[in-house]
Length: 130
Image 1 (spheres, one colour):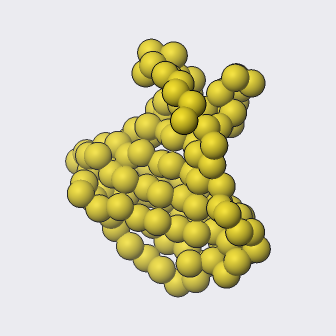
Image 2: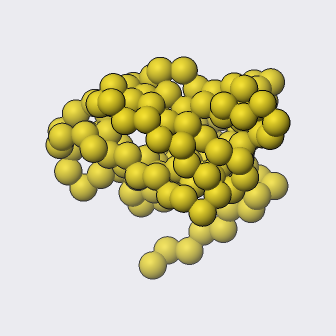
Image 3: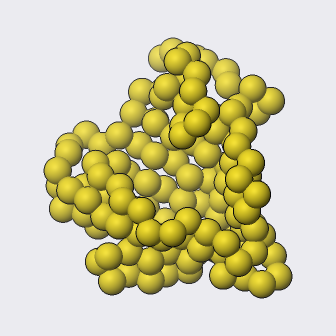
């Protein structure tokens, strides 16, 4: 198997005020052609969301998305009627399939949330979202 070292100090960084994000692979405005993905691993972001802020409704399709809180709590809502708060020690897996719209918020008034978000390109596309 191919070995590749991506040092934390070499990650992309985005500061949106309420969101500070470290990107291990090309993502959003961070573009490095040598860091597009690693096999099926497409995204590995270390996100820090300030208290009271979050990602409004946005769509995903044909992607496996894993969220792992390291500090604080993150609320997830989607167009399939799911509402869930995940915290340190939890792992959330969302299969976007043919399409899902969701939001993620830090509802806390006291602490920021830090979480890893991992995107994996699925083996099969256009499946039912879950």
